[in-house]
Image (cartoon, rainbow, N blue to C red):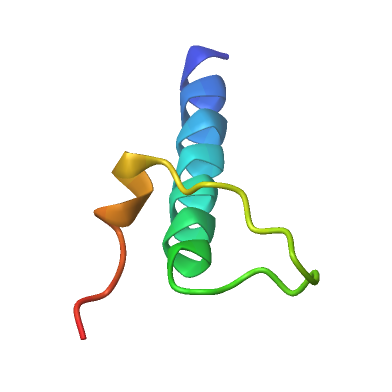
Length: 48
């Protein structure tokens, strides 16, 4: 049971990291609202 839980938590963490990387390089689609990006998320931005 621990092995399955560990595998599931790793999959959730990987999905969250991929989502954060994708969001670091995009802008908000709603007019006038873009919350401040956390400092750690700036490190995930692609260099241009």
